[in-house]
Length: 154
Image (cartoon, rainbow, N blue to C red; front, side):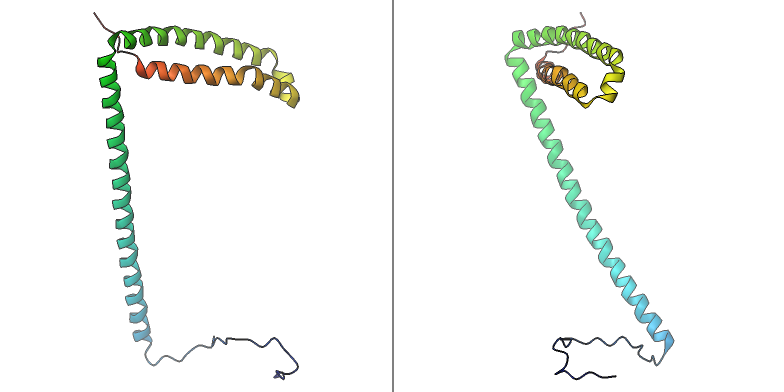
């Protein structure tokens, strides 16, 4: 059932032989397969070791950056002790404000549960009303807390 190439303009460019090749010795083919598998496993292990080394390098770099930031922050606190103390006091006050704000948010959610669940408009109004203030308050509180001096236990 061969086709004439003139009748079929789409002739294959490549041909692949998928027929089974006869093996002279079945044990030789098994040994070749085992050798191939062992080689592949060695390559996989080598690549995994490279990956582990890269991850260790990234971890070390991140730790160094964190140590540097901590040292810079500590130097700032030592250079500005009054401001660091004011930041600590402000962080305590803002923490109380945040708690009150969160209390009003949870009260609002509890009171309007059905409306928030049933209405996309009400949910969007709720998010618009509380979302930006909560996000900004959290951001300010985070900055002030990081700059705050540790509390004296005396």
